[in-house]
Every structure is written in structure tokens, then in C-alpha cells.
Image (tube, rainbow, N blue to C red; front, side, top):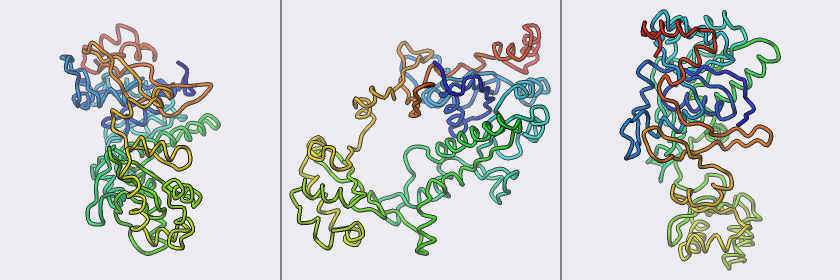
Length: 403
């Protein structure tokens, strides 16, 4: 498979979810991503779930999903020889990505300035909970942070929940994944600059900042109204109707972001008079009478199945069933868009399925083309690519610098 980033070399020092998701996005688009792991492998290799017939447990689903399309080099960054290998790899790379706490790479003497002195074109990206002092010293800089911390501090949990007093964590790890996507964008912007000018740079994304940017609505709401938004269940603070509604066999979503959709919906519900009723005529009217509006829609949906609601709304009103994973697998859209990718899983007799890339291109399609690597699976291959001889590689392995 070809990708738009074919020929771009990325050195990936990341672990857990945010960093690996960022470099996964680059790998999906054809970049050669070399994952640098400790000699014992990335700790997330031990996270499940595992297939029942997999007795080897080289890695579970967590690692497989976000480390596909990558090469693995096992390297001891604390050893002098390991540091030399890493600097040599970085000196010929286009991009380095890490998500350690601020200062870790500097204490190892392989931080941005050291690498940039060897490779001025290098784009060096860091994803941290509260950013890096190079771009703005946060008072929280030394605190550890994971998805739930970013969701809580960045505002996502504060507007999610059944009522104003019950904030909830959002299911997927958006505190990791959205900053990861922002980092991949920043990396490509910096890489474009480096290609034009020869000047590399440091790219910094704070997970906290990333979730604040995701929750941009609450920033302007507070500025305009002086009030902090709170959880409002499954309805929308600005649009109505726009949320989830009960069906006989589950839940559905219906949205009327324009008044014309409300006109269509009232006709379908057999209540066309509601389109001209002064309580419901415009979106702002419906917001002022939200409980009544929601109740009208709920009354209609609750006597129908999801399939019946879909058939009646057709192409006229924005609608979607609340899907389970099983529903997603069964939806023909997934096959048409090739969103469910099958890959080999070492130790299991049958392939496993992971989510593919949603980014589609006509000339350089990219996508999932290989499983996640075994720890150190490509050490020899990668080291040879930067000039190490087989004898030198054997000596490095004997010293414990690589595996």
C-alpha cells in the first residue's frame, strides 16, 4: 500500500494511548514509524483483552489497535551505547515523538536541543499532560496526567452527565486521542515548514489544552453569559430538538439544527400545526419550551422501533440509532468504507479486527497493512538501515543496549 507520507521516517518513543495514537495516524498514511521500546517491551503489551487461544501473550488488543503498521526496536535508553544508537537513528529521521513527563529526555541527555544540533531539520513532538516549558511553563508541569485527568480538568466531564450534579467520564479515551490527533496535525504542519525551509522545531501539545479546545463551546458560553455550563443529559444546550430519544428496542438520536428540519419532523409525526405554533416555531422558541418539545418527540419515538423510526424519517430528518459494537459490525456502511480491518494476531489461529483509519485519499489511500510488531522484531533491520554492521549489532546485543 502507498501513503502520502511514504519515505518519512518517524522515531516513536511513546507509550500508553496518546502518543501511540498520534504515531499510528502517521503510520496509517505511509510513514515509516520505528517504535523504540524498553528491552522488556512497552508495558501496554500486557493490557488485554487477549484471544482465548493465545497462550503467548506478545500483546493484547490495546497494543494491537494503536501500534499497527509500526516497526519495533528494543533499546535501553539509559545505557551509553543505547543513547548513541538512538541519536544515530534520530539524526537520520524526519520526526521524533515522545510523551514522557517534561524533562525526562533532557535528563537522559537526548532531548530536543541535543538531537536538533545533530539534525536541524528534525521535527520533535511531545504530548504531555500540561505541556512543555519550552512553549509555556505551566504550574502543573510536573504532575502526571492520563485520559481521565484531561477529561476532568479540560471541561469534558463538567458538561457530560444526566444532570447538573453528576459529571461523567466520556467512554472513549478522548483525553488521549484528541490531543494525539492535534499533535499529528502539528507534526505535519512543522514537517511542511521544515521541507520548505530546512528548519525543524519543537511541537508541544498539552492534553489539558487539547480538551479545552475540544470543549470550545464552554469557553464562549462563559464569556457571553458569565455562567459555567453544566451537564444537560442527552440534549443540546443551544439546539432543540437535538439529542437521544427512546424507541421500543433501544435509543435513537434525532437532530433539528435548522427550523426546516423541525417542519419536516412535525409533518412526519402527524403534528404539522407544531411548525407554526409560537412556542415551537423557531429554535429559540423550542429552547424556551425544551421540556415540552422533547416530550413531544419522545411520545412519538417511544411507540416505534428503531427500524420503524428510520423508515419514517428517511432522508428528511437527521437520525441515527444508538449502536452497540455488534450493531456497528453489522452495518453495511462499515464494509463499504472498509472501516473494520482484519490483522494477524501472533499466538491466535484467527485474525482479529481493529478500527481502520477514517482518513481516505484517492491517490494515496494509506490504511492498515500490518499487525502490531513483536518487541524488538525489527531491531536488526532498522539498525542496518543506519549503517550498523551485523558484528556491531551483535556487540550491542551482547552489551544489553539493544534486543
